[in-house]
Image 1 (tube, rainbow, N blue to C red):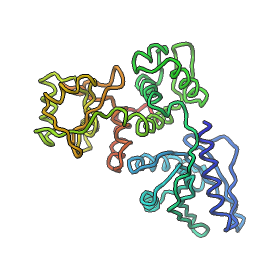
Image 2 (image 1 turned 45 degrees about the horizontal axis):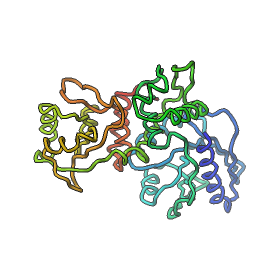
Image 3 (image 1 turned 90 degrees about the horizontal axis):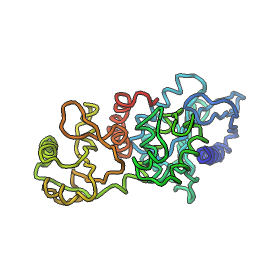
Image 4 (image 1 turned 135 degrees about the horizontal axis):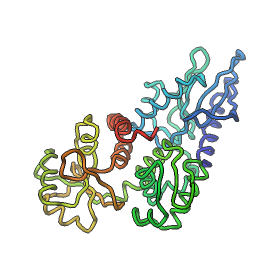
Length: 351
């Protein structure tokens, strides 16, 4: 993964610059990496002690990503391969940096913002540096169309029996783009092609991370049609009952879907995925009024198969992958906690 290596190099260079006055050397290790680890570095401390760091490269940190980040850090720490775990990322704002320090999460970003504590040796906390002007190049999947392809792959994984034309029909992406994304994923060893139309996801955790990142940064904003309020207020049960009885072509997403799927989150908003051409009809039947602070969000559909029936509900509920992407795109830790539960309950093959 070229972009991962570039970001790791930028972060380690920034860390070396911070530690240089302390005469502490940071040396990347070229060795077989444990599962879930993107790099291993060694610190030569002044007392000749060697400290080994396991580095996790994670872009786009936000409050909702922290519960799963902590879970990943704990998993790596239990392997006892390294003395400490550090997160390498693109940029951490001052408020989030403070949160990471409070949670004792070591990090360094490409701008030189950092938190690293080694009792008796190192105590670093730098914030306030601006994001670098040029971010490393991202992969073919870090686009709107790339996100659609990732959704299809995860939706049908871990073993996918589909041709490029099947994918094109399902998510509306050009054959050329599908080819570029699939070739890049194969080169990154995220999936393997057994034969034409037969693929296997070999690194589902990385693919899920890429889906969440591409959804948050590229796809989600393209889908939004507007925010609204309804006479039902925050009575989402009444709203979904109307959708069912009026046979409105909507797939239920957002916090309502997350609450249904996990029985954990108390929803404060709902998202409806609808055909764009049906927007006027949906607004009329649900008596929706545009509102900047509305708790109902309309989004256009982006694939042929977005929903599923859940329990005895008469409405379609968004696929857990979509709800996971929505939750991880948020700026609330409770959404991240819900996403972790959702993954464990509905996406158990992705670890």
